[in-house]
Image (cartoon, rainbow, N blue to C red; front, top):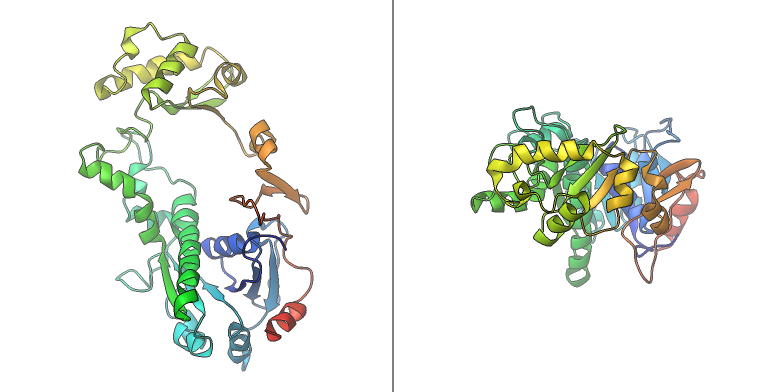
Amino acid sequence: MAGPLQGLRVVEMAGIGPGPFCAMLFADMGAEVLRVERPGSKRNPHDILARGRTVLPLDLRAEGAAEQLLQTIARADVLIEGFRPGVMERLGLGPDVCLARNPRLVYGRMTGWGQHGPLAQAAGHDINYIAISGALHAIGRSGETPVPPLNYVGDFGGGAMLLAFGILAALHESKGSGQGQVIDAAMTDGAALLSAMMYGMKSAGQWNNQRGENLLDGAAHFYDTYACADGKYVAIGAIEPQFYALLRERCGIADDPAFDAQLDHARWPLLKLRMADLFRTRTRDEWCTLLEGTDACFAPVLDWDEAPAHAHNRARGTFAEAGGLVQPAPAPRFSRTPAALPPAVSPHDATALLARWSAR
């Protein structure tokens, strides 16, 4: 398998959401990822998050199963688990046991609330975790309820990606120390960290605590989405003065003095109405012909079917097809060790992989 993480050995405790996404990132980059799951688990052929794995069916509650897995963990570099705090310990696979067997192991723990704190043992999902970070409060229109941003902010951005970053940081540190460590990745922490810029702007008096009244939350007439004549949408993000000027020029409003005071918040509601009326005069394709590829900071809002077919995404190979599934390709790109789209779950059992690891 190609990619910059060739040779890295990862044990993944099967779960849902951010754990599998994190393990997918490692598999995409060429790591050997062994997924441990219950025997008889049904494999979803449409589960893109499971690509690139070899599966080890193992009933961890069976006698001797923990010891069997510990023998494999002893030869691994990384372990990823996403259970509630205490579950791995009750299975006999907690950090102390695993690090005693493999002192260089990086033990990645993915939870919503974290390993400690008043909410650590409570059930929850992405929407709950981002709610207490402040992030959910900020997303939505003024005067309306907060809008869940799918599960991008908690599960994937604040969760899986920060766990992957933490694991790679710990692997780097272990090169000098020779020691592994435990990564406590909480989606609440990660969602808060993703809001660092907004907290900074708020402290500087540049961000209103009310949703839908700020530069990047849809309040500004030059940073929002608009419906077109055909019912499709476009996205505008002309923040910088030179980009805003070009947008006005291309849209035929360069000489309209109403648009001169770009950053006058008091005028934004009226100017948004003017912009909405303007964009309804042409179809989305007509606006693409006029604005796409210019410095007006424009893009069509594409749906799930349209995005893979867009010329830019096709030129970069942003999406790929494997096993009959259209799916996002591995990212980012590497100049010397490019990653390749890994296959879905390995059709073979883990015998060959375990044999290679045993020879280490």
